[in-house]
Image (cartoon, one colour):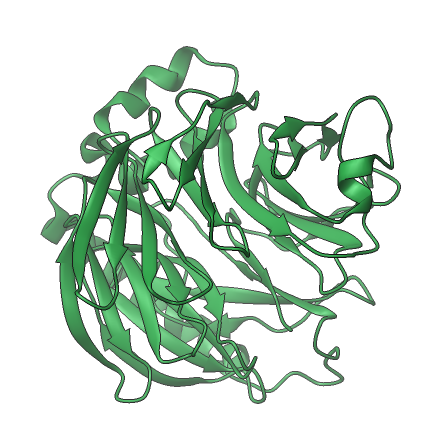
Length: 379
């Protein structure tokens, strides 16, 4: 994430977020080709050490919906190349999966058979079979890919490339990049609308969001949001995109019909990621002073924002911010379990924290190692 202004955070309370600064700030990244060469060299030895256990099938694996995958991120001087599976029933870490150097983000294909992983150290997108936990194919995308989303039909992966200000549209049948679209500076997050027609891209470097037509493969709108926008999610009705702005401590709604931003809401600590729950769920923990229930949450419509050391519930569609659920660790990524009873927060200090959304409390953290900053839950 992050633009030259990231250095200004040294005086802020959220010091832990500098763990990723060298990956994304121009000053910390240095000449891109040199950085990539150093990372690749360091990763060869690491990859050899991890290969024996990384591609092995997992014994006694959890059922779908009971397994999470955590990007074992790290700073450029100490790159990693693994994704860590976590059994959510046994609270157990299973053998790591070896992928490309500096994995940055993941997405699961709609049918639930593959995990897509972007690796910014080697500029690739890889597919991991969830049946065998082995990489089935890898393709090169843009420079320093930092986010990935999948269209609902499962045909296209949309990869945001931080290093060159583009998105790559990857055909998941041929495993080839079919189009490259220029967006804003330093794109770090992407979400696809439920109809598969558009992608919304958060451009960390210029405080904008790009709305891209996936049919015409062109930008249809560039919208000013807030400083250092670092997260994006789209509501299941396709009406609204929520953009989390780390630098402003805000979430900004974008009306996807009018392509206009709405009034921002404050989320202390700096939003890092957003997960959205909809429909009737078993997770009523949103608004006001109630620790485990409100009218909005009983309808099951809420966004959950990982920010600071907490998970912040936000009722939809009115964007009413509820009381934070204290995670107790620097929150980076968040994903919801299948019934939305639990959220799972990846933290920059090496943990995956289950959060009981009914009780409004965090459960015992699961140590996964490294510096996690992204998590997905298998469906």
